[in-house]
Length: 279
Ligand SMILES: NC(=O)c1ccc[n+]([C@@H]2O[C@H](COP(=O)([O-])OP(=O)(O)OC[C@H]3O[C@@H](n4cnc5c(N)ncnc54)[C@H](OP(=O)(O)O)[C@@H]3O)[C@@H](O)[C@H]2O)c1
Image (cartoon, rainbow, N blue to C red; front, top):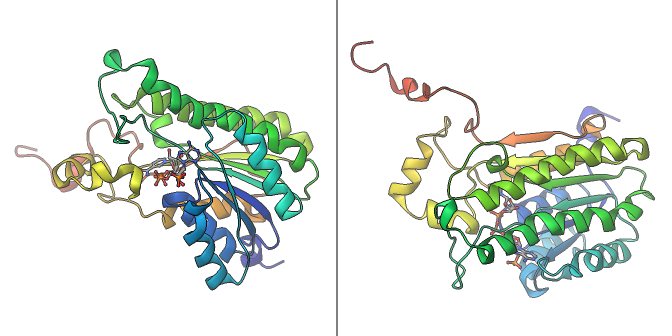
């Protein structure tokens, strides 16, 4: 096997949740281009039609589609079993679907913790945490049958740093990192690798209220040393890497993809623009 072969996913059977758009769609496309056979999950089958069509045209492989609302506790095991049935087994679970708290119109709700409500926390805990647990639990028996099993949880840098007004989101994302570490340790004797990805600011529908607001976006990017948003494709490469043979001895890790946002800088990042007057 050459070093470039190590980064391929030939014939890997992968379920990718949240594959209708954003980071999940980019991961699905990258997996298919790397040789994987994919099952795409979103709330409706219609939602993954375009991504499946693109994969079919560009890679010549059929992308299977499964659907269900992961806020419903009965959906995760059904999606896993349907994907495993369609693919003839399961080698990789990528749980990428995730949500922020939203208002009834679907707009993100970012407000002080003390004013946050149980109704706002509940769907975030259901999709980002409870569904993660249920998907991993359901995938386990299929992964035991796989020659190269692994799990990848799309967490967030918000699970590693303090993000006021995003506590519900941050707590669930931190829990995904914790679960990845515990499962990696517990499942290592069964050869199942479990890792997490922690993206920073990525330009998707989820963050449109921020990247669509020039002033707010500019304010946030002041704290990103690379001073820009990531494109979803910049997360997808790391997803391929962590589930490929190139990462065969990597487990229990949280790979941060954030343009330097979480690098501790003690408030000195602004010095890059030049020392303040008098220094
Ligand atoms: N964008 C960022 O800056 C950023 C940063 C760090 C981490 N992340 C994480 O990356 C992941 C993907 O984020 P994104 O920005 O690509 O989000 P996005 O554009 O909002 O897409 C979310 C995906 O999750 C699916 N989804 C949402 N709620 C669901 C539910 N209840 N049941 C099943 N599927 C559901 C959506 O499918 P439908 O078609 O059914 O809506 C869609 O495919 C999330 O876990 C997010 O927390 C994002």
